[in-house]
Amino acid sequence: MIPITKRLVEFILFLFLLSFISFILIKLAPGDPVKRMLQVDEVSVTKEQIEALREELKFHEPVYIQYWHWLKRFFQFDLGNSYITKQPVLSELLSRFPATLMLTCTSLIVMILISVPLGILSALYKNTWVDHLSRLFALVGSSIPSFWLGLLLIEWFSIKLGILPSMGKGTVKHIILPSLTLGIAMSAVYVRLLRSSLLESWNEDYVKAARARGIKERRIFLSHVFRRALIPVVTIFGMSLGSLISGTVVVEVLFSYPGIGKMVVDAMIRRDYPVIQGYVLFITILIIIINIFVDICYRCLNPEIRLKGVEKR
Image 1: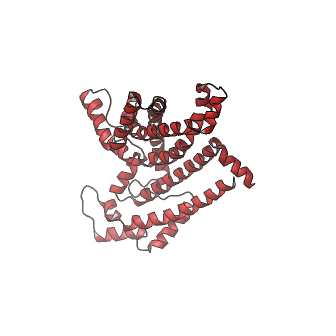
Image 2: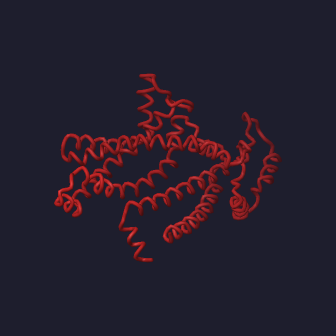
Image 3: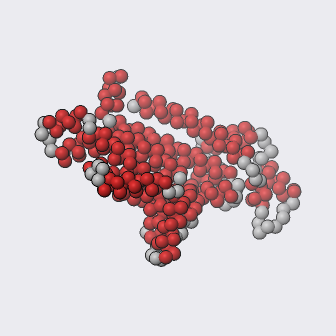
């Protein structure tokens, strides 16, 4: 558990540094949030109103003092209030997160349903038409930008066929196109990764030894080859899961899906700084938790890591 504790300390230091840098960068961004807050139906506001609001939000204080105030609230699990909605940022993030989590899970299901069968078939039937077709899918899938794939799916299934909605949230149909957009793009990467890992594992000495002992190919594959091939896949999976959660921004905006990705884009347009800062911290903490979980899974799958830990103790 010592390496995990060390990683945890590193992550906390990283979180502190990231919060400071992101706070400074947000403050340096162009645009005036005060004018944005007071702008209602293009009605002009007086200079006195602008200055009064600046004073209320303590914008006249130095940036490091503003950061110190934010940091004190952060340790009390308070990310501040939205400039626009006046609601607590944490409650707004938590209210939108289930929609993003649902989209992430359905995208992962799509990715697994596509990449695992194709990766295994591609390795089993190496240099056949099945392998060539799988590799072509991986090449095309990884080359297409997700937003363009989303537009193609909208064109085919929403406009021409009219069988799936192109935006919003409410029914199962609403989540199909966003999930396909994210899932297909991710599966292209995992088809190639799983194929290469399986082929590499198949040529290991312990597999040859198992064959020499007369163990059936099916048992060798399930007990040794597939498990060994999952180690690099799990490592990449952790990074993909984090990037998937944070990278749903484009897809959520494209399909007008009300997750935290769309919320933060709206916050950027409105210069809603507390929401942007809260989003950065929220996603970072989530990715840290995912990485720790992946570390634990990696140690469970890789006996060499476990043995090294035992030897050190």
